[in-house]
Length: 159
Image (cartoon, rainbow, N blue to C red; front, side):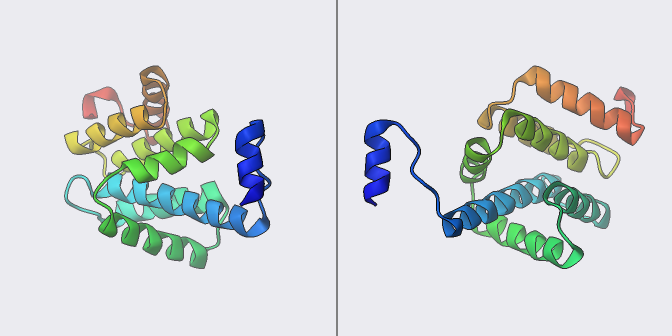
């Protein structure tokens, strides 16, 4: 507590112990999972393709094994069920991800939104809202979207 107070007065970050770092890392993982699951569910369905996309993104991004990925998906589902707002999740992302990682987060959201082959307007709205909340520019979001469309072999006519 005293170290946090000193850090506040001096403007230097307080030392972070291993337990706190682990808790922050877990909160970040759950927030990421929750946002991806929320995006996948915005059209009223969380189908197998969307679940597989979310799982693959989490596994790759956080370098998880299958069991840890399943656990994180479950924690994300619980977080979405118990939270009625995006702000808590986006604040964690904004405060803990670098600019590059925040842009990658938007790219992952676009991947989830397009995972069923079409973009629902609720999904697009969510990505736009998250873009602003995590301080990613509209230009960067648009470029991320184009990368996803190219990677998935989709063209703008299908959006």
